[in-house]
Length: 165
Image (tube, rainbow, N blue to C red; front, side, top):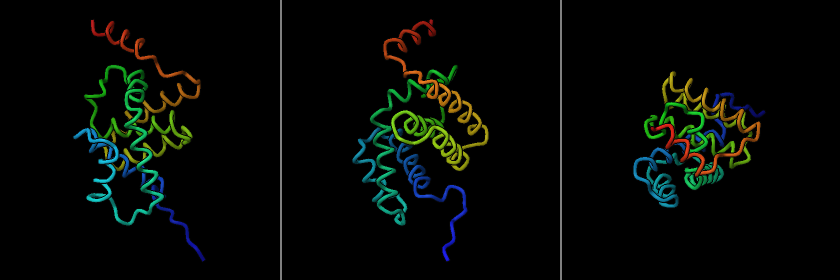
């Protein structure tokens, strides 16, 4: 008889997301290229019990997020009124980036991406930050469901120039 593991956040994809968050945190600190980042993480810090499927998914999330980071940050900026991304806590901004990548550029459903982000935020951040992340991701999810296109770089730059005056 097989028993299911009922512990929240115990699945392969959840573990991959936690590893991806840790790699994105490292990327924020040293801006290393994706292949170096993933190799260093798995060789030095990664959980040796993670199987290849978990590692592959984590690596796809990290490299995809890094590849689309400008577009992801633009999506976050629209809803993070009065918050500059650089001023957000490193964990919080990377939880947001990971969730937005999954919502906009990966085949993960928006609801799953938001729920996973909140579980990870509860583990790695504060209660207040989890509420902040929830509010932002809920707004971003609604935008995505209405199929609002991410802003053009020129439009975003024009709006940020006007708001800084």
